[in-house]
Image 1 (cartoon, rainbow, N blue to C red):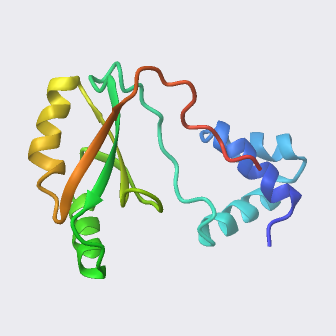
Image 2: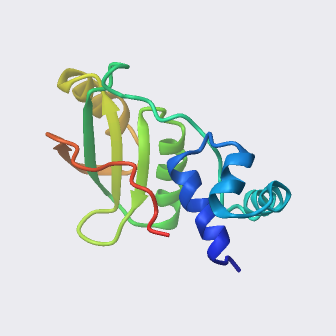
Length: 151
């Protein structure tokens, strides 16, 4: 069970992942030892899954964000398993979600430009097992991304 203090810790960490234990303890009003114990528990329980840097995709040559609806030719457990395994081996795929509705998966990728997306579509996405059809949505403007969970 998470209490108010755990939620405060998580809220701060979402925004400031590099904060020191001492600063975090001061911010939430606990001793450094108690804060450290809570952090160890949150990590052990899998509530905190890791730490990393947020990178500017534009500065790194990945200026085009694309979402792709993927419709599979069959919706059987075997096809789902093979598709998921192949997607997990594709480094170009940033996120992939099985969804309910008019298609089976929603894929998120970042590429340099539309020509790079065309190569990704032909060489990677359409080559995945079971893919029958795709619909592409190129993002014109990112209004909000990487928002923290509303704790």
